[in-house]
Image 1: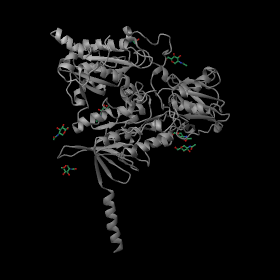
Image 2: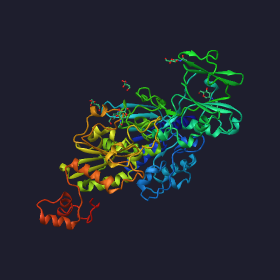
Image 3: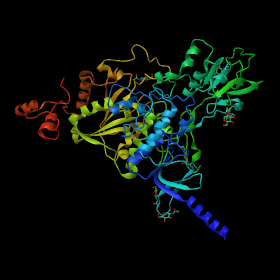
Image 4: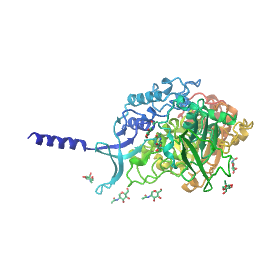
Length: 615
Ligand SMILES: *[C@@H]1O[C@H](CO)[C@@H](O)[C@H](O)[C@H]1NC(C)=O
Ligand SMILES: *[C@@H]1O[C@H](CO)[C@@H](O)[C@H](O)[C@H]1NC(C)=O
Ligand SMILES: *[C@@H]1O[C@H](CO)[C@@H](O)[C@H](O)[C@H]1NC(C)=O
Ligand SMILES: *[C@@H]1O[C@H](CO)[C@@H](O)[C@H](O)[C@H]1NC(C)=O
Ligand SMILES: *[C@@H]1O[C@H](CO)[C@@H](O)[C@H](O)[C@H]1NC(C)=O
Ligand SMILES: *[C@@H]1O[C@H](CO)[C@@H](O)[C@H](O)[C@H]1NC(C)=O
Ligand SMILES: *[C@@H]1O[C@H](CO)[C@@H](O)[C@H](O)[C@H]1NC(C)=O
């Protein structure tokens, strides 16, 4: 009797446990990328959940970076109160409407500690009420089509045997799996994930660090005062972020070992391939010998007796960074890695959708593939935008809500643009990737303005925004074409120009406008050279770079821009006082567009003053 009751109970519990659960949107991972997406889904009132395997949000930061110090800047003061502008220099906050959720309230350190980010992320989730289901580890993600309804859903299992289902899947699990080089003797190496960070463990030791990234240099810096010396090995030359303008390259805050190398204080940096065909480690008593192959044969000390790594080492540490973990997907889904040299990212398009799996999107750090080594999409200050702009695409694609846009009079365009180029944070952080689009309506009298659209999808603009456009002006920010690079002298005396006449030679980040009478085709988008962000437009305009990144100068910044817009729209965009308009209306048959739009039609009557003085 009792055992029967028990059996029934067990069956019932089993039933409850094996329940199917459905949401429209599942976000896998509650790190910064997942939380940002969660906030937008929450705000839009969607049926969604974030599935997090740990008991806290942003759990990666419970352990990493090992040395506690983040390299994303916490710039608390800019001298400005404008929230949007300040986000240009705030690299840790996620986007929200809650001003208490700015990272500046969580740390005074310019390079904050990881625990401070953990606190911030926890508050972000709680205050915004983002729906997170903790302790849920998903696996075997697959796709199924219902034969009767012909609808596809994603299915996945959790560790308790539940099947979780959704219509749209967003994977925001970050780069969580260490990159593991393979070579003989790998078992003798120590690894970034659990190597000692106590300098005392390196007293009088000779150390090799395999890897060239920020974590490798940070480790080196923390121990180089204790070691005999450190050799750092990487495949390619050192890439300094101040030269490449890529925040993922070696940051100035971590370069200490370059000093001791160039000043010949025993530490050194060299280039070699770390791979099973190129090297192996051999134990010699309790020390390690690095044996290197070159052109297929081992370098022998007999004929190359000044081989740089001929001394024995005490520790070899692998510091190769992290990659996307695709083990959560069933092999029935075709999850391919990107074609970049490091294979770190899943292969996605500029719409952040998997190339080969419809309705599956990547958000957060793993969505960096399309702008790897170009822009900031691998970092909080980048993917908070590239995680939210795709959200707008999802809203159109799945919910029928078009991309937000505002309609303005063409005589207001100049003022709108000037405000955007001096404030807009999304296209500032995601330079070359996101841009404002101005669609020209009513033969130049009206403009429809869209903020921060992925410009690489320009040929599909109507499809992704839900508006049908043809003639557009696109505004992006960019560095000079040949200015950035690991071997470029970015401090040379002619690095910047001050002359508006040659603004196209600007090197530092500056606004660039592209006017297309017709949207570029897919073919034009794919046939641009690597120096071009967008295909050749009908009219192009650069605003000269500015030392203050403040484009507020009436004659150097605004006048050339107005002339450009006047050419493109074939309209007079000057602004006038009301009294002048009335005088002109008395004396002439035609009055300028501004007078028509503001004083005669009455549409803009609220603005009694000209926006800008005439030059
Ligand atoms: C397919 O959809 C129909 C209608 O919603 C439903 O009744 C049926 O159970 C579904 N089939 C499967 C295999 O899920
Ligand atoms: C099911 O949907 C797919 C893609 O949405 C479509 O190509 C196919 O023709 C549809 N099949 C049926 C039977 O409706
Ligand atoms: C480092 O990783 C390699 C490969 O996974 C492993 O063989 C080795 O034992 C690890 N070293 C330590 C100290 O954990
Ligand atoms: C590091 O982790 C590996 C397993 O991943 C383990 O074998 C090793 O003992 C750990 N090393 C240290 C120093 O804790
Ligand atoms: C390896 O090959 C390259 C060209 O293939 C050659 O320039 C170089 O000298 C070779 N190095 C050695 C050590 O033989
Ligand atoms: C999987 O993706 C690769 C790379 O994009 C492609 O070549 C291949 O055809 C795809 N396979 C399937 C079954 O979709
Ligand atoms: C940049 O350099 C490339 C290769 O040297 C050259 O083809 C291109 O014209 C240069 N672009 C500019 C804007 O100077």
